[in-house]
Length: 86
Image (cartoon, rainbow, N blue to C red):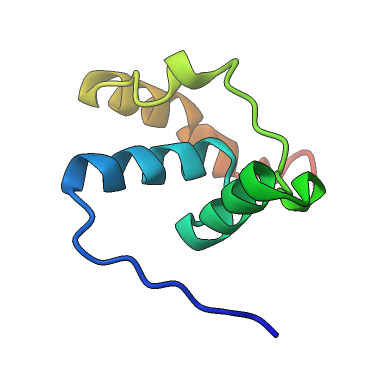
């Protein structure tokens, strides 16, 4: 029989740390906490994670408005159809 635990009055810093750790494993908070508790107190094989790669993290959000405008200008021709070729 499954039991339920409800945690109240979690301070903001602790919540953000839990949320951040869950995101590291690409899990929602509830799934992460269930896996963490099982890993800590028994049945370690139950923490299922998805592969997570961080090799391109330094590129995320690196573009500014000028970069985006230049990129969009350079790719606008990709959507045009050259009728001579078809």
